[in-house]
Length: 187
Image (cartoon, rainbow, N blue to C red; front, side, top):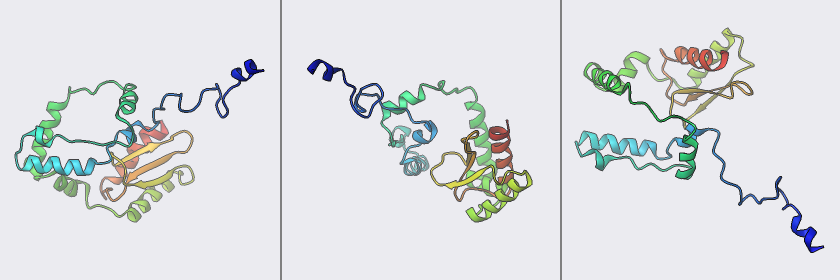
């Protein structure tokens, strides 16, 4: 009888292993998991150090994450390493932007228009969805926890357009919708 007991599976698992025996799971939303919880504070600290011309090593961001760093590193293995091929071009563009507009914020204000409240942005989004017969198909979610201004999630099962709360601009929002829905939903 003791022999039979030893072969029994542990309760609550498919293979008889306890949940603490299984390796940690990589999150499905790697981009969301990779966003540091202290990104805004570290960005402010970094920019302040740049203004005061302190060495970059002093201002090097010290990020903290919602998941353990080894698990985040494991999740990132699914993607190729970043390319630096276009970095010189991006730096040249940003330097030109600073010469013409002074700051990126001034550039956004002049070109993207004023920031929209979430209510005003939602009215534009709902009108856009109505024009394209997508009101009952696409969910709209305003959130503060995004790196990008917008993203499309669950395009096949529960299509949702996520918009960064308080960051939508009056002259850019239609282009954002064209990109998110045209690129990530319709294709």
